Image (cartoon, rainbow, N blue to C red; front, side, top):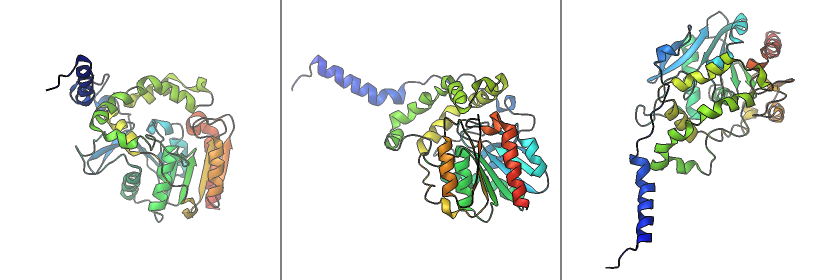
Length: 322
């Protein structure tokens, strides 16, 4: 029998380590995890949707129901400056999309028989909220990836949605992992290490937040605290990894001409995440839509420029009434 030399044995051991090590080496535990009771807001509520506790906040009123949909890495906090002013026009509801905020992190194939993080499932969650409120008129307000969910819902359930307000919507492109590497993410070794990799957002989160604002000096300590709050939710890293694996291109750009409802598009002129050019393109691709560019404003106008945001929304709503 031919003997294996020391160099060959070395490479065999390295290969075994790469194949088996990620599956057996204990991962460092998440730090800073708190009970959900310590993280909720005074008006926080939870709704069970197919076994998942979805966190939401709401101002109930008569008339139109506005459902506010946050973007990637955000939460219901993104809407706190505009919820009360919008309630002058009806009920206002915002919830944490799966993978974000204080919504429970369920793990597909372990706890549920569906994938709550996929874009094609997001409208199902939204419709559960809408049906439970029995509203006669519904307007969806979506920022960034939340705008994608709003459009997908309006296309899936055209009889339910009477208007869209899209704020720097992420239509031409997508989030999650690049298409070329997506098949690799479910390899057992990579899949087990994935949640550990996404924990780097603890350090990068503030940089991303600053990128979303035209003037980062406007970001307060309270803003930072509330953006970091979801990083104390149990299994937040697993939820973010599951979201990353299944999301990517949305393929909505070919269906925009199917939208036959009033649409307002709002963009910050200094948006570094979804450049204003994309919102201008979107306005030309959605028949009859209205476009408002807010000067000296970034990716989250409802947070950085709430007064200008509300002026644009009020004008749109008044036009709907006339």
